[in-house]
Each structure stands twice: as structure tokens, then as C-alpha cells.
Image 1 (cartoon, rainbow, N blue to C red):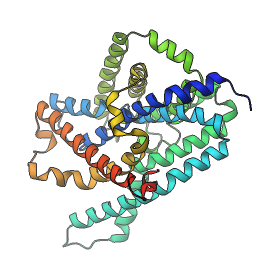
Image 2 (image 1 turned 90 degrees about the horizontal axis):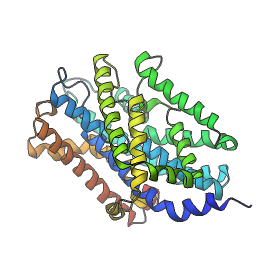
Image 3 (image 1 turned 120 degrees about the horizontal axis):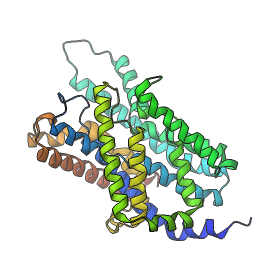
Image 4 (image 1 turned 45 degrees about the horizontal axis):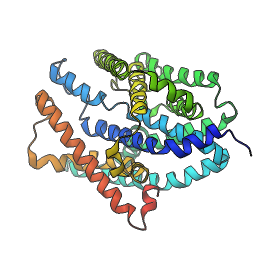
Length: 359
């Protein structure tokens, strides 16, 4: 089948390296967000330390949107090599089994933690706790995003014929904005983790970048760095302002990824990353081989092991830390989680069990 060489040669030969590089940055952002977060309503009012805490969570908040955009970019290229059915089958075979195993490990680890921390003077309703754990893991943690991601891919495959239609993109962004409005209106569950179709737009956008990469790259190259950085700074400020407003409204999820301000912030950060393209240090982390494994494993360490690892340091509770202490502790938490997860993934990668991390 004849295909336009502009669509096949450029992304496949020249762009996959920088996509992997940015994907590594995006995964670091996701890990940093999860390792920094230590509760929502833990401060009284909005002192400078609370704003700092919000900022440390908001700073890497671009990670999820970036990950979907980059996946969409790669998906656009795969449409050239595979039929929709072939691609979906290939994706499922590399994703579902590792996801199922690690999510069940997390279920077991969470259940065990509940049991250990339970009041032994009261009866422990194991079945009730187990049901609650399953609900938490598969609806409110990062493991839900794998299913969400596969659903988003399936949606794009269904609409493959209209994939490059601007009208389809407008429909997807409208769906995302409905979730953004729902944060305030509370028509349905507010958490971004349950936003089944809320991230299809980012996947679609990535496919558009792939399809029109020559024009997009030329446009990005014309944008001065100072303008991008200034725009990111403004969107970051607006993101913090929206978080504060949601705190005042007692929102269930004031850090929601689908806040309008965070959508703009994430898109602008992705633009900056696409302008920079290559980050030399990322090659040492082998993102193509380790990214999925890091995503699957890191939250188990955050939830079950991080507090125990930090216990010997006798670090005070988050809301009592100074601004400098907050920043240093956040960096320490991130370093512990990312490095330990990376080492686990590398160890698995070098064994016959590498399929556990999608290899």
C-alpha cells in the first residue's frame, strides 16, 4: 500500500528518540507527583508552606497529559504499520498481563497494610476490606489509567476513519471540558482517575502532531523560549489559583488533572519539551525499556514502603515543615521512589521474567 513518505519516514527515523526522551521526563513527573503528595486537606488556611506544597504537586502535573500525547504520537505512526485490530491485539498482549499481575500485587500489599495497621481489639472484616481495596486500586490509583488508556486507544481505533478530522478533536476536547466543569458542578464523580473519556483528546492530539509533524516542528521552532517560559509561568500561577479556589469549595479532588488551568499548563510544558527535544541524561535510564515497568511498580513503593524507608530519618509531618524542608523532603521522596523503582525494573529486565514489565 502506498503511503505518504512524509508520514512514515520522518517520525519513524528521526522522532522516536526524542519521543522516548520526553516520555522519560513525563514519567519522572508522574513519579514526582505521586511521591510528593502526602494528603489533601492537611493544612489550615493558605500559609506560604501550603502554597509551596501545592506548587510541588502542580509542577510535575503535566506528566499524565504528556504521556497520553506521546502515546498518541506513536499511535499515529503505528497506523501505517498495523491494522487497528493488529495494533490493539499487540498492545493488549504487552500490557494487560503485566498490569494484572502488578495490580494484584498492590491489592495484596494494600490489604496486608490495612491488616497490620488495624486495631487488633476489633474484629477485622477481611472481605469488606478486600472489596474496598479492589475498588481503590482499580478506580482511584494509577492502575486505573492503564484501563483508561486502552479504552482511549479503542475509541481512536473506532474513529480511525475520522482520526485527522478537526471536528473529532473538538468533540474530544468538549468531553474533557465537561470533566473540567464537573469539578465544580459535581454532576458525577469528580476524581480525574474515573474520567473514562477525559483523556482521549490528548491521545488524539498526539496523533495530529505525528500526522503534521513537519508543519508543527516548523511552528514550534519559531516560538521564542522566553515566550514559552513566560506562558508556562502564567499558566502555573493560574493552576495554583484554581487549586486554592477548589480548596475553598471543599472539592474532593482539588489537584484534578483535568482542571482547565492544568490542561493549558500541560500543553505548554509539552510544547517546551518538544522544542528542546532531546535531554541527554535520559538515555541512561533507557526509557523505551523501563518506562512501563516504572509506571507499574512505583506506586507500590509510594504507598507501602516509602514511609518505612523514611522512618529512620524522623522527618516531621508534612504540614510542620518549612518551605526549604518541604522542597528537600519532596526531592528526597522522589529520589527514593524513582531510583528504587528503576533498579527493580532493571533487575527484572535482565531476567527471563522481563515480560512482567512489558518487554
